Image (tube, rainbow, N blue to C red; front, side):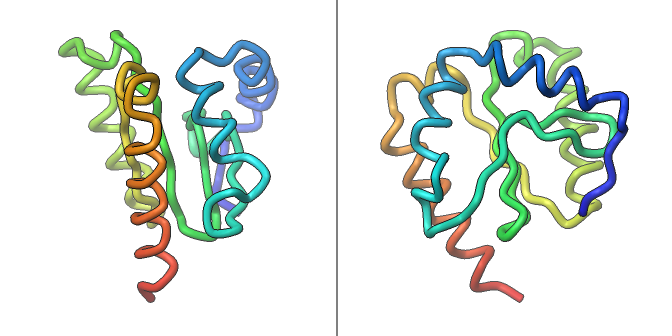
Length: 122
């Protein structure tokens, strides 16, 4: 199991009950092992972060980015977060909320391709 901050357990539960429209839409396509029979978890604590979606078998994290992620501060925070997660062997895929809402099939296809590649790579 990847390390996490136990203090994030309740905040992650709270986030599960207040997902954005983009997160809800993507969750409908990830849940119940619809992609390569892989289990995804939502709002999963990792290190000192809560990632939007996590697939342990593929060591894959998926982030749904709203407007706050595109500010200078948000971009810096995301870069530091992605670096910390990659040091655990995780790959982070980022999609904007608008991309998820308007290009859902393309987003799911990219997740499928990356997950398949990660499963095949040692």
